[in-house]
Length: 226
Image 1 (cartoon, helix red, strand yellow):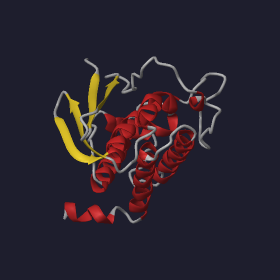
Image 2 (tube, rainbow, N blue to C red):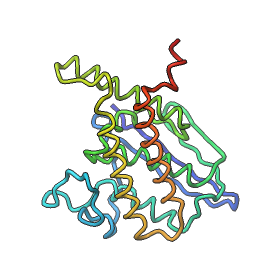
Image 3 (cartoon, rainbow, N blue to C red):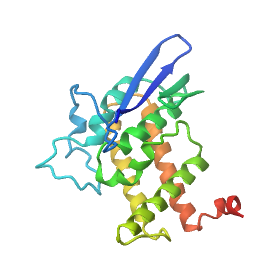
Image 4 (cartoon, rainbow, N blue to C red):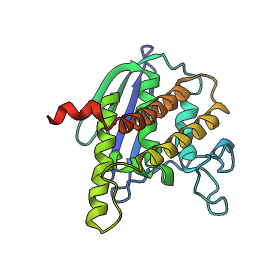
């Protein structure tokens, strides 16, 4: 199977450009990051997430921090509200939007963080294969809940303990929030401006909203199935 690729392009009014190719292994969906130098703020024991399951004896770097390092460096002096045209080109389609750097970064950081082989973010990895750039809050909630329930279906088919009533999803997404907070602390060590920081804040807000939706029995989506 060929690699799964998403090529992100940021085009600015002054004709400057930034390009970020994303390649995922088709079997594992793991992000195939660059082999460039890794900053000290990406070391595993720096601002380590509260929920981190990795052992320092086995991992020198936080896999997420290592994979977003180039992205953070490229936008460390960019304000979040700066206007740009962002395109995501994949084998299936091209999605483009006139937006802000913050929204474009939230989209690209979301897929990198989900596929960086962080155990706490594994719940998000299946959605990466069907990445939806610039997803709205409602789209993100629908995709997250649907992916979780599909996971339970396959767990049931394998004879495992499944969670069709989504009782354990809050626990999973609380870990996602811890990772977002940990990554934000790392970015604060190097970034001058706020584009990449606000991108993480946006992703964290989505995780919080999903938990609230589940607590309300996904009532906002009930109308779609009546």
